[in-house]
Amino acid sequence: MLKKATSQNLISGLLPHVIPGGVVSLQYADDTILFLENSVHKARNFKWLLSCFENMSGMKINFHKSDLMTINVDYAVANEFAQIFCCKKGSFPIKYLGVPPHYDKLKREYLQPIIDRIIKGISGWLGRYLTYKGKIILLCACVISIPAYLMSVIKFPKWTINAINSQMAHFFWGDL
Image (cartoon, rainbow, N blue to C red; front, top):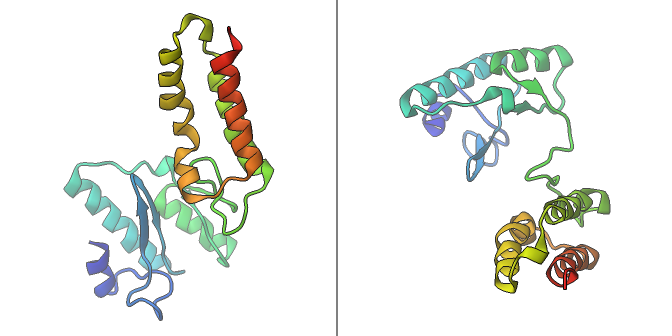
């Protein structure tokens, strides 16, 4: 649908000199990032396309959970875009799955919330009432799933891995 709209010049994405029509969208699982050139007219077309998608698919886009990110766009135009898409304006750096996408090593301040989330999750568990197998299942199903995706994309520093292992070991062996 987006490709057809791009070919009809209803919308256009970023880098049209590199990719015909430009990059219009990136998707992962149920998350989508849409790119649009600085044109109010094409923004209205884009919104119309999204409404068509909702009507054809039966799915609903929750614009209230969406953020509009602009780069080198006048404040008034950015407000108009936000009004067209019925969403709030966001700011950089953005976060995806709790961590900002980054091309270099992530700083401690970005990874610490993951450790904190693990600690918070484990602290509510009563390990002394679980068997060893029960503890292993709980750790594998809950704790390991928190950083698993990020670890497949980002190389975690040793201190992060040690902190996660330490919390898991404390839960596993702490209530002897």
